[in-house]
Each structure stands twice: as structure tokens, then as C-alpha cells.
Length: 81
Image 1 (tube, rainbow, N blue to C red):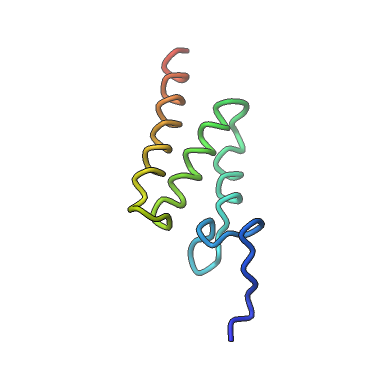
Image 2: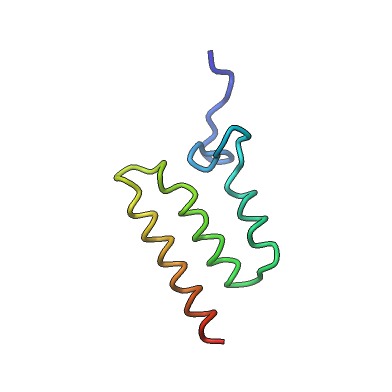
């Protein structure tokens, strides 16, 4: 019997990876720790979509496209400096 409780709000299965159960939010926190504002937002959002694309239905292409959407905005911002 599985003792784990399914919690789609606090710990959705598609946001947990690996044998250690790395949570997406923890990976994002580490990745954007030196970023601020909109750059942190774009980076974190792209990472969230990349993190879960394979776990989503329909092949995950929609999540990959959304990650690209955020990456394109981040690239535009960086290039405009």
C-alpha cells in the first residue's frame, strides 16, 4: 500500500523529479537566486515549463512552446541592453 498522500497543490507529481524528489520550486529558487525582477520571472517560468513538459499530456509540445515564449522575451531583454 502506498503511504504517500497525493497533494496536487503543494507537491504535484509533475513538479517532482529524481530519486531524491527534487521539487521544481527548489530548483527555480536556486536558478534565479542572483536574478531579480522580470529576468527572474522569465527564467523561472521557462524552467517550470521545461521541468514538467514530459509529464504533461499531448506530447508536451505546448509546454515546450511556452518555455520558448518566456525564453524569447528574456533574450529580447538581454539583447536590448
